[in-house]
Length: 109
Image 1 (cartoon, rainbow, N blue to C red):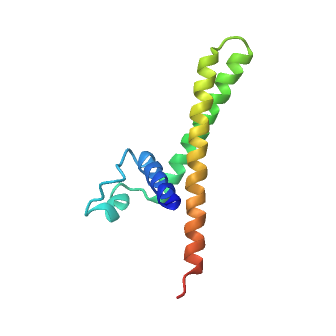
Image 2 (spheres, rainbow, N blue to C red; image 1 turned 90 degrees about the vertical axis):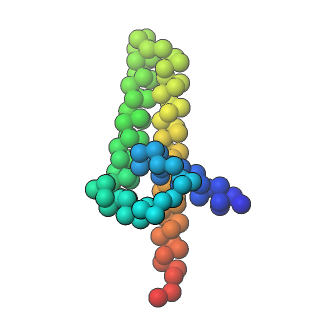
Image 3 (cartoon, rainbow, N blue to C red; image 1 turned 30 degrees about the vertical axis):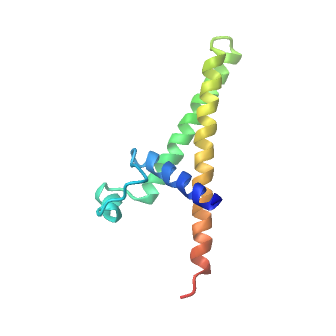
């Protein structure tokens, strides 16, 4: 059951990055949707990496403002929490991609 929960977490993260696509309602057009939007898995990963880097940068800037005495501690904690969530999502997606690659490599042709 743990694998099922982890898979749902990965699907939810994929949906958030893809623009808020709900993971529970697959449509008949789902397989063609990435090609129609001009992107694909690579562009989604690129957006996710860019968003994560941006979130980490914002957390760093908030921390630097706090150290300089110009920032609010609540803003720092909020920014760090958002950065932690973004990084956790990236790690979960990476782990799923590596796991899927391992499964593909074990397939017999």
